[in-house]
Amino acid sequence: MNRAIRRSHRWLNRLQTVLLVAALLGICALAGSLLFGDDGIWMALAAAGFGLLITPSTAWRLTLSFYRARPIYPQEAPVLWQMLETLAERAELPSAPTPYFFPSPVINAFAVGSRKQSAIALSDSLLQRLSTRELAGVLAHEISHIANNDLRVMSLADAVSRITAVFASLGQLFLLLSIPAMLLADVVFEFNWPAILLLLFSPHLALLAQLGLSRTREYDADLNAALLTGDPLGLAQALAHIEQASKGWLAVLFPGWGNPEPSWLRTHPPTEERIRRLQALMPAAPSHWLDYAPLLGYRVTPVRRAPRWRIGGLWR
Image (tube, rainbow, N blue to C red):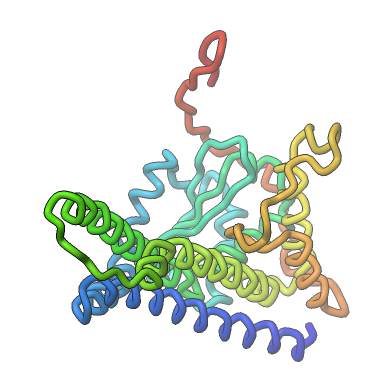
């Protein structure tokens, strides 16, 4: 694997992460200071500390229960567990993440928890439609998120964005309450309109920074996944497969259907760019460390989907 390309990708991703986190904290602190002065800055820092230290370790079980996910036991999918243990050992995690299964027609996977205790949730569509090689790339990608503490970074970003939105809402409330006072009591307020506009738009600026941070961490997870498997094309094939499946039959009938929103409004980078970067990391010879049997030989007890309403009745 090209070390120069790998090193440049890694340092660029780290630099972007630091700059975006600093921008998020700066926007939040500025919004807080406009409302509460120095106390607002301390409130912003307290929210950041909450998101960094508390949220990742307490909310992951709630997230899994929201998806009605259940654990996949080793006797149900020994190959899956073997891949997770191998990748976790290479990522130097204290223990392998526990795989979970949740019902969904969408090919999806996500990681929750922390380096000490984590889980990876996999949809039934993912287990049914991806090959073993593609699944290994997806698992390595999610394990990279855990190993890089991306879950803490994104929890920090989420907490800072939320407190920024609270500051903006309070600013709008104060502004609305001041209008009756000016009209009925002849009270004159001196407004700093640039500061007010900055306060009102601060949640949108924080959201853009948060989305940019998410895209940067995705690039870094792709890079580390390629290092863990030694097979960048495995993850590239999985991304192409997932992208094709997400478009559906309308994209076949109507070319251009489902074109994504502008890249700066997405949580994930464009798939084409991610595949291009992975292809640039391709080693001279393919890796054969994942010569496992297909997962189709193992049964995972399905989780029943709750019935949902549609015109004409219910479907499951």
